[in-house]
Length: 252
Length: 310
Ligand SMILES: Nc1ncnc2c1ncn2[C@@H]1O[C@H](COP(=O)(O)OP(=O)(O)OP(=O)(O)O)[C@@H](O)[C@H]1O
Ligand SMILES: [Mg+2]
Image (cartoon, rainbow over all chains, first blue to last red; front, side, top):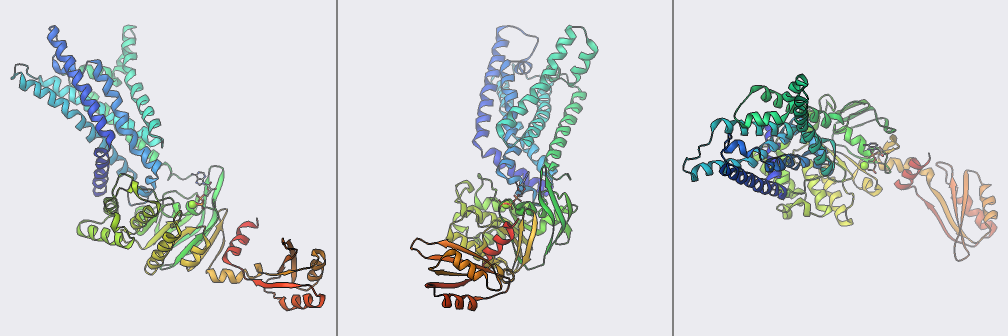
C-alpha cells in the first residue's frame, strides 16, 4: 500500500505537471461547453421528451471528445517508461508489477474524473442561473455520470494495456483507440442485427455494447449488469497489462 | 554477497551468457571486464532480477534473485547502463521519490537524500530539472539513486561511460571511497578503470568467463605475452633466421620504419628471457642497433590475448 501510494503520487505529479494534461483538459472543457450549449439550444427550439442531462450525452460533440480522450490519457503511461529505460530502474527497486500497474491506472482514473468535474459544474451553474426553474433530474444525472465513469474504467484499462505493448506513444495511442472503437462499434452491429430480426444475437451484443448502456443510463435507467460487466472487463485488461510487464520475467 | 552458479541466458537466437559461475565476497570491489556484447549488462540485469535466467542459480545477500526477488532487490543499489531517469523531475525530488520507494521515510529520508547529494556532488543542481543536466551529472544522479537506501551491494553498469577525463577521475575516486564500506560489482571495457578501482577482475567474452584474478596476478600470468623489441639495420630474412635459431624464441616479426631502420619484435616462450643471447647475437653479427627493450605485458595485452584468440 505504501509503495502504491508513493507511485500514485509520482504518476499524479507527472500528469498534472505535463503540458499535455492541460491541453487535454482545455480541449475537453471546450467541447463539453459546446455540447452543453448545443443541448440547451436543442431544448429551447422544441419541446423534447428528454431533459438537459440526457441531451448532453447525445450530441455528436460528446462522442468527438469522448473517445479521443482515453488514448491521450493513457498513451504515455507505460510506453514512456519503456522508452526511457526507467522500467528497469522501477522494476529493480522493491516494486511489484501489480503495484506499478495499479498506481498508473488509479492516476489515470483520477485524472479522468477531474476532467469531468467542469461539466458537472456547468450543469449546477445552469440550475443556479435559472434559479431552480430547470431542475436537474436526479436519475439521468446519476446514470449519465455513472456510465461515463464505468466506460472510463474500461477504456482506461484498455489504453493502459495498449501502452504496455509498445515503447512508442503514438503506436500506443492508435492501438488504444482501435480497441476502444472496436468495443464501441459492437453496439452498432447489435442495432443492425435487431433490424435484421436476429434478436437473440442482438440481445447478447447489447449486453456488451456501450451504445445501449449509454442510452439507457443517460435516460436514468441504472442497471447493475453493466456495472459488473465494465468492472470485470477492466480488471481483465489490468491483468493482461500486468502479464505484459511480467512477461520479461517469464522463464523461457 | 553474490553467488552465481551455472548461469545461462539465451535470447532468441543467441546465448548472451553461457554457463557462468562466480562469486563476490562481502567488501570486494570486482570489475567486470569485456568487449561490447560480451554479456556484462545481461548478467547484471539477471543479478538485479530485471531479467530471468534461462538456467542456473543466482543469490544476492543470501536471497535467490528469482524466488525472493523483492528482498534481493532491497540489498542492491543498481545503476543501469545509460542511466535511465525521468527528465521532468528535479534532482532532489527524484532522489526523494526513489528513497521513499526503497523504503526510507520521514526525517531519515530527507537526511539521507541530503547526504547522497553531497557525496555525489549534486548539491548545486538539486533544484535543476534532470532533463537539463549534462551527462556527467546524470551519471551522478544515477549513482546517488543507487546509494540512497544504503545498500550493501552496488552494481554499476559502466559508471564512467561517456564522461570527460576529469569527471571520470572524480567518479573513480568516488567509487574507490565507496569501496571501503560497500561490495561493488562494476562493468567496464576500459582497462585503466579496473586497474584504478578494482581488487579483482573478471574477464568475460562471448558470455563466458575467461579469467578471474587480481589485475597484478593477471599481468604476471601473461608475462609470456611480453616481447623483446629492437631496432636495427639489417635484412629482415637474415635477422629472422638468426634469431629464430636461438632457443626459447617462438616468432620474429619485422616492421620497416621510414628512415631505413627495421623494428623487430621477438616473441618468446612463457617465462623465458633470452635477452642476453639476442644481444650477444646482434653484437657478433655487427648489426647497427639503436634500441633494445623488453615490453611488459599490460592488462591490455591480457585482455586482447584472452578475448581475441577465438
Ligand atoms: N533483449 C535482447 N534480445 C536479444 N539479444 C540481446 C538482448 N539484449 C542483449 N542481447 C545480446 O546479448 C549479447 C550480450 O549483450 P550485453 O548487453 O549483455 O553486452 P555487454 O557486455 O553489456 O556489452 P556492452 O559493452 O556493449 O554494453 C549481445 O550480443 C546482445 O546483442
Ligand atoms: Mg552493457
